[in-house]
Length: 501
Ligand code: FES
Image (tube, rainbow, N blue to C red; front, top):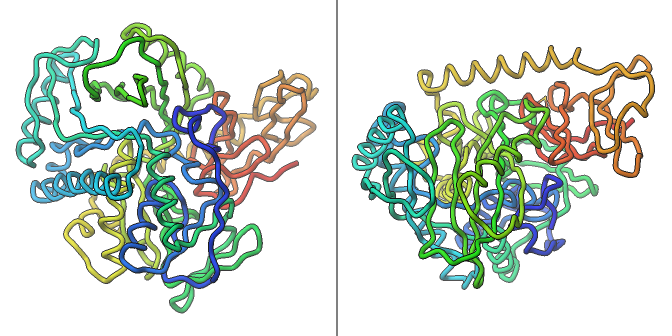
């Protein structure tokens, strides 16, 4: 299968690409765009409830972050419960903790019910501190976990060869192979008559008189009463362009020489934090390690992040061989919680985004929220995660930072091109924003020495894209749209490609 970057993720290397086209009609009750874990789980859930829906994906299932996740399923989040209590209140934090536990049960039910073979394991998570300040934070987290009912206790040993000052053991976690999980769910969905169109990109959409009309790149037109953007950030220029910030995270999978006693997950409390988990597939044992995150488009030397990750790995772990290394994109919301529910200002459009590092959990939790909303049922959970919520104290600083960051890029990057006299000043494998013959280009010379010239102007709102050498893509620093070397759209919120010169 394909993913939105050049590096091949651990999951991607084990799954074949399938082109799925299965529909006989063009009008549906609900259309879901995006066949990652959010869209696939939701399509299956809606089918179970008797809804008539169509799932559309511009590439293959799992092309986006689901193919690049580290696939841990947790009942706590990057936004810790002490922060959630502070920003949203204890009652809301308890509600979210219960929803997270329900979500893990829900994933497990799907696996059992559909006999999904996806390396699923239940396990514990070990969170640890490295200094006094982090230990204080860990105490706050432990206290908050007790308040919200997440089974957690202090521990004096962790099943990873990492030094720590203080550690806690958080029970009730899980992990799996994300692509095997969604692919089997999809098979069940299609077997039961579910409609799907992969390799189909939405080019245009209109929401008028209670009907949504979608036009695709292969000139199909679909209509529906409801639309769900399961694409991470919803496309177009809307408030989520400033309420979400895109980040890249780096991961590596290592084959272990010896079996580990039991599956486990761990992370420290640095910012950005380092995380690791064991994985068992057949008789083989692996260690997946990640971290070294940065804001999308902000780093020129993305290879350095892999080097730093490998240094961290070599300093701390022993292993037989490196099996895969890749990077992936996630979106952080302004107040730390995802936006799942009705798109503000639109009667029949729904979104699910802003998962930070908890995409498997929040992507699946979407199916505990949106189906109810489509059936006219508002719940306490849907109110808590409503995209229309306003949390001024929690969000003001972050939103402002991101708006400023995007504006700085918008202006600064316009003047950042390297002036060159000859195109062959560009080395093989090098991508750069160049000024050549009075014009600015996003230029890349491939390994065969062929030059690929694109307009550097992101079609979303006009920022200048930046070169990502490790994934061989053009990444927009403003809101995270990404494009391949031919200008083809990899990730939104842009809806169209970079112009080819
Ligand atoms: Fe918004 Fe590029 S993603 S300008």
